[in-house]
Length: 390
Image (cartoon, rainbow, N blue to C red; front, top):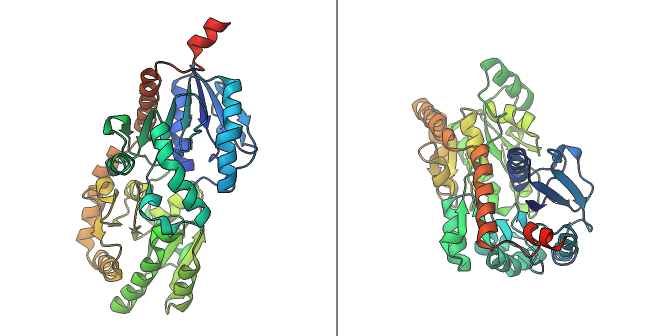
């Protein structure tokens, strides 16, 4: 079988949430199906680290997709030409973007449709693109895979897609996330927080992640408790971060707040593993991988009570209302002052983390791909047709 894959988010030293999803699932899929051919389609020079095995053939298709206009050119002009040359049986897109012009059965992994509910969080050009094209992508896809039951039902209800065309598989966590010993925790705290305990947030800095209210809640927590606790925020700045900076600069406790920027898993696993608790309170989330990573590190979790997060964390989190600064601050205070609660959350996390596996995610992705291939009656570019025409 010949499968073309959109791998434009496999970027060396720049993997974000969907990039990590692509990395973790695709390297397992190509490993587990050595007799199939995979064409990895990049929009710029690629790193050899992403050519996972000998059955992967990389192809670079310009232009680099750095702007919504270039997204449209790549998916509606460059990509169809490449697919016509490759003649694959199936097209897989781990970031949900499809080509509306390509005559080939397609699988779209749509992680969530946060932009449908919160369009104001996006720059105008991106907002216009997502709002116009993603409903069309959802209808174009032979099948859709998503990462939570919340997103599955949301996509179905918002875009009118039958539930039986949408498969679901939870994400996993990198195997590097494991509990730290006391001496290593001490070393990490000495490096990042002057030896003090710290709350940690992990995620890109933009409005949906609710960093502004987290900073205000930390301020309220510090004033109420007099605690020496620090706050580390791990993630790259994306857009609309001016209010984050203003709140930080006005904080009386800014010396106890550290923005670290993006971290690779090796360092993030240390920083997360040494944290007092993860505070992850976004306004909308399709899954929330940091929750699972924290559970794998035996770190207790504070989470938003909205969208997919209760589905993912189950009984292994202390929930709060992400719209209410006082609710977040109260949760921080409760977890700081209640050792038995922390121990309970860690214990629940050890059980809950067993439900998440990249091996299972990759297997479910492959099953979705096979359902799409079979339901399409085999592709216009399919192998059977290719052989008949030879």
